[in-house]
Structures are given as structure tokens and as C-alpha cells.
Amino acid sequence: MQTTDKTARQIYEEVRANPARKRFGFGARLAVVNVDVQRAYTAVGEFATAYQTHPRQLEFIDLISSRARAKSLPVIWTYVAYMASGEDAGVWGTRTDTPDSLQNIKFGSPRSEFDERVHPDRERDAIYCKRMPSAFFETPLQSLLVWHRIDTLVITGGSTSGCIRATAVDSLSRGYRTIVPEECVADKHESYHYANLTDLMLKYADVVPVQEVIDWLDGYAPRGGEPR
Image: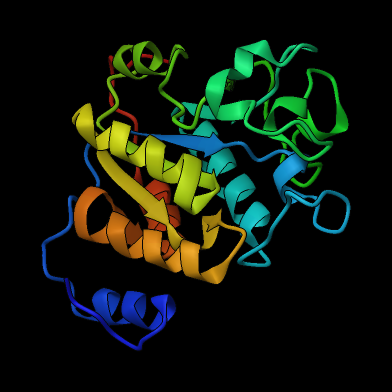
């Protein structure tokens, strides 16, 4: 095992500047998957579980979501919420039982609500409640992507070390080109965030500036016969 005195951020910046592998790249059709952009994780100063990495994260998430929607590409939002008993949180969510615990993000509670700075279209976008880290686990996500003939996923939200990583690994495992816009993901601590961005870049995803996603969407032209 290699050792170093460098920070996780320094290692990430070195890997980003000197990529060891070629990119997966964008395919023919993408979907935007926004993972758990809810107040439990975004309302810094209100909830202890919330965090912020890039100050414009939510603005960028809303922007690429609206651009994708305008091109008739699917936009998916996930959130976590649990029964009053917490039993559907399983062993993952019930290790603790405090006001800040995962199992206590209850349906209809402020912690379960999407952040007011993002604007899901509740008529056109897919909104899934998930109970485990990956957006694929026990949700209809895979079926939706097959219907839309998607080959590329753009994954945003949080946390980088948790649900983003889990979703990205599942995405690649299912054969999708996986894109993580750097400014659109966040974590509680700089170390976790950059260590996992490095790992994603090396193994599972293209970690790119959000402007690359915007540029791709601006240049995308739907072809005849595509599902809508």
C-alpha cells in the first residue's frame, strides 16, 4: 500500500491533471439523476446532517435538469424517507435513533422535502423514494432508463462518499457511461469528498466540470423516433 503526506484534495487534483485512463465519454442519450437533494442534506445551519461543498451546487443541478428536460431527456430525483416505525430503514438506517438519525427522516417531515432552490417538475420528472444508498436499489430507475434508451447517466447530489458513489458503481455495473459533474456533488468533509472523487475518476465515472454537461446538452438534438 502506498502512503503519502498529501491531502485527499491534493491527490485528486494530481489525478485530474494527469489522467491514467481515457474517459468513458458521453453516449447518444443521457438522463440526469439527482440524488437526495433534500433539506436533511442541504439546509446547512438547520440540520446537523446537512453540508455544502460548492456554493452553486443546487443552482447547477437545477440548470442541467432544466436543460435536459427542455431536450425531452429524463430527469430523475430521489429522496429518502421512512415509516414512522423506521423499520423500512433496515439495518443501515437503524444503527442509531436520535433526531438526526437516518431512520428519523420521516415521510412528510421537513428533512424529507426537496430543497427550495431546486425545482423538480412533478408532472414530467420521475421522483423516487429510495431507502438505501443507490438510486437503483428497489426503485423503477432501470426500467425508466431502458424505456428512454439511455446510455449515459449524469449523477448529482450527495453524498459523494455515500449515495453518489453507490449510484455511480451501480450505473457502471449496468453498462451506463457515468458522468459526475464536480460542482454538483457534495459531502460532509473535504477528505471524504475528494478521496471518493478520485476513486470515481479512476474506476467508475468521468468526473468533469459541469460546463461540459451544459455544453453537451446545448448541442444535443433529439432524433425522430426517440421515446418521449
